[in-house]
Image 1 (tube, rainbow, N blue to C red):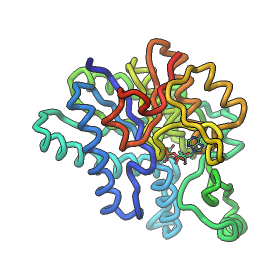
Image 2 (image 1 turned 180 degrees about the vertical axis):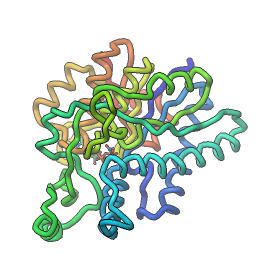
Image 3 (image 1 turned 45 degrees about the vertical axis):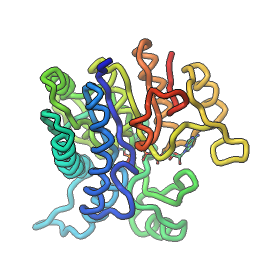
Image 4 (image 1 turned 60 degrees about the horizontal axis):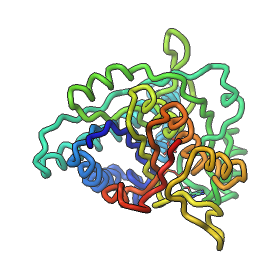
Length: 310
Ligand SMILES: Nc1ncnc2c1ncn2[C@@H]1O[C@H](COP(=O)(O)OP(=O)(O)O)[C@@H](O)[C@H]1O
Ligand SMILES: NC(=O)OP(=O)(O)O
């Protein structure tokens, strides 16, 4: 049966071995091939994606700016720039792969603004890891030199952290829905969306978590399913330990219990779990799925992916 699906792409669907434009474009061609499998099944896709590595790199590139002729761009604008670059690569890759599959469908990237609360406590407590992974020594040297905050990221190294307020609404969600009704594949809410506040939609310095933004988008467009693609086939309890156990079908209440027991690392798996719980609580007849890109074509088979239901 045809479904309206929000698919959120994690880091490894965009970045493989390095962060060059060519390498990211190549990774997105592979991703597009998998996404087209969902289109072949008659589904309507609304694609979102992360930007943590890309926006962090872009912010570092701003250090080459001088203050007048070539000013540094603020973080909200850097988020918009990554929506543009990743959106361009992915639109292009989707058009090519749809052509190969003989499917006549249009694809468009929507520059998407996401409303946040300017009093969100997240502004006083940066938690969102962005940019490259550093050693502890490198991170501490950067902290001393720039005053920026760096934190250890889920056992993988140290990264710069920035404010990450919760998405409250999505400015363009109605036009995204109209595009879906017109059978257009949209790429939207990239990098969690451009964070804006107030009636005047003023941009603020933050990076919204793309899992929360994708769940909000799925809620607003009344999607049938939210699929979060990441680096693992399944969510696990006791992750990385000898008694690690993969989750296949799990209820929201069971997942809440595992969350309270601390099974999900903040900054990596925890936002996906919270996004999935929020989405399913707000859309009780829908399902959230967390799995790998490679598993996408096998979704629906017994034991494939972690399926979260009410
Ligand atoms: N309980 C868990 N189950 C599965 N993976 C986990 C768990 N806790 C942490 N992880 C790690 O979190 C990663 C996903 O986070 P991350 O790489 O930050 O997300 P993204 O794919 O959106 O870029 C997984 O690939 C895995 O290495
Ligand atoms: N904005 C965002 O959440 O990006 P990542 O998923 O790449 O961390």
